[in-house]
Image (cartoon, rainbow, N blue to C red; front, side, top):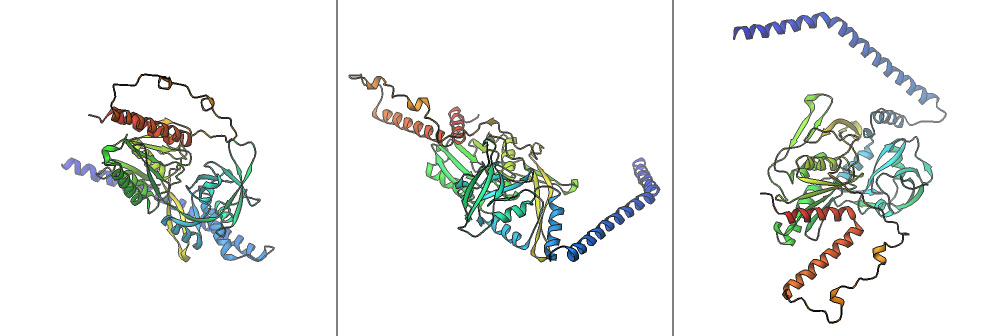
Length: 445
């Protein structure tokens, strides 16, 4: 014990001596850096005064300062920005699920506004805006050189008014215009329905309503199906979901996990990181889950998909997600404004960051685009093929009861409905087919 104590003391003393030897140069370096910062702030003050006094037109001092602040923040990354009092108030309203606008989540890339995803049931969605579209002009005015906030301001306007956006799409040879009528956006965070024997949970955003909507909707679908044993599983549809509140993503993940880590966040200082773990209780009661994602699935959507994928709780199907793996903290400022600042990266339970890489599906399934001008498929044009039952005088099947024949006809009708769904939404139909296959195998022993 005496040796251990002495060794500890010796180490402490050595540290003190080392610190004493380099303290002078370190203090001098720190002082020089502070002097340089003060010189830069003086430079900013000089420029501000000259602009205010000598610019060709009168300028609003408040606007100048806000523009300088926003320029500083937007130079960091696409998601950090200054929120004016009006923008901060609008953001608070948006997280509650109702706001005015077009209904698109956007970011900035290569100087243009890029659509992360249109929101289900909104004017932009109805007008045909797609994830990955670049918006180059608004009502004929170019967005090149504008900040993201300035571009968004151009897209705002009175409810009921028309806006024409010019879009560049990857598979379109020329830019084209889309007309949209602005409207009040009322977000229904989760829509639930049953397809065949699979419950579909369509999560459109992560706001204050998401987890309560999901819990209520799932419980209702299970009850209408006649109990959890009557369903094959759950499709959690996160396609074109641009994200939202971090805690809502954690709660949705927790809804289907019994234990283990959901997500971790790591800032510049290691001690500032957080880990979020699941609590007991699985709303799906062990039933298989398929998560649907695409290029419009971002942020909170990727947290959920990554957590369920890493824990092997779900099969992830679709195409690679957007790749937004950073956490923004909204900090209130004096004058009712706010600052949105990127403060951390988040990591899935296995320790992977999805920043710029996205979540890769377990099974890649692209959504085919239907060409309305295309000719009908060969099988659609083919004449009906006659079977044994169509032949005059064919023998009846005497091995089945009327109930068995009725069941066969019902199964055939379900198969035909599944075929229709495949035409309408190939990715969803694929996910439901996976659940059917897993259910046919039976529970794991």
